[in-house]
Length: 52
Image 1 (cartoon, rainbow, N blue to C red):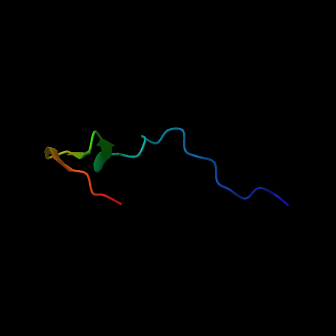
Image 2: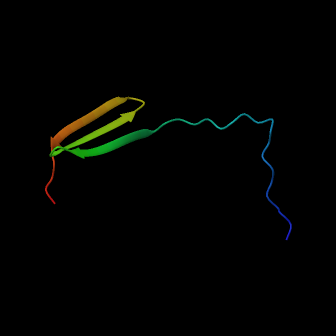
């Protein structure tokens, strides 16, 4: 079967991309540390770990 996909345009600029958010959760030493970074800034918390 023929490949019907259209080739990418080489003269077009790349699409604009932006970071929406990135985050992490870390559990260590009886604590849960969360961190989130967005274009507006960085926030985070450190709380006692939840026992499971």
